[in-house]
Image 1 (cartoon, rainbow, N blue to C red):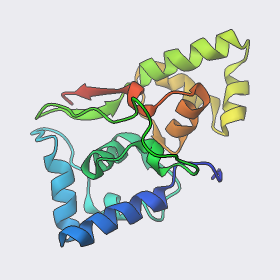
Image 2 (image 1 turned 180 degrees about the horizontal axis):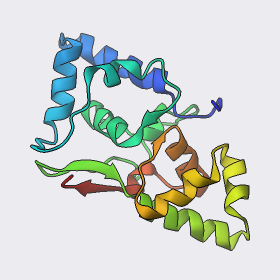
Image 3 (image 1 turned 45 degrees about the vertical axis):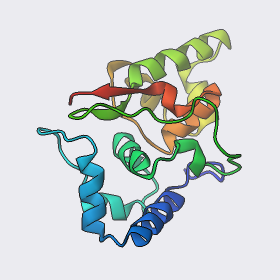
Image 4 (image 1 turned 60 degrees about the vertical axis):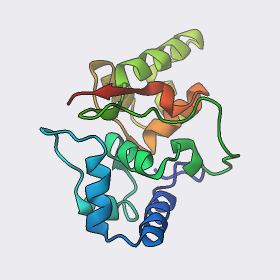
Length: 171
């Protein structure tokens, strides 16, 4: 379910395309640069079709979007409607070579659970407020991956920057 206040995948595509054109790069070169950032030897690289396809998808895998945001040197929040400049603490952390930036979904789950418990809500009630399935929230505890725009709905509900819920990973 797309919401008017969701993270804009179209705006992310447009920013990638603008940077590509400014630097005189092909989409193949852009994809290569995004993948080269982490210098991971055993990881599955992001495909060119994934990078270009974000303009037409309503949901995109979260860790891949993080790599695109790092390449652009932009925060996830900068692609949210009503964004008012640079948020304090929202900058995504740089990761060492041979590592990749991923969402720390157990940490995100713990924060969601703490607020849910404090507000005496069920997972179904939280999911209803966010417009996503309850199973999407509960599987985060086991380290499951997350997607855009869902992850931004979650961190928005928490009132915290997405960068707080990221970690460097070897895999």
